[in-house]
Length: 47
Image: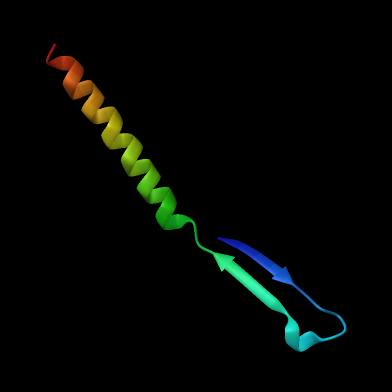
């Protein structure tokens, strides 16, 4: 998870925090690369 916090010392009510969760993206990327490798080996076995 990535967090970015912007603080305003003069006006604390304007503090902002943004958080991004990258875990689903990582799972998708790993699964995509695994399936790509699996398909590549399966297709090369047929030749």
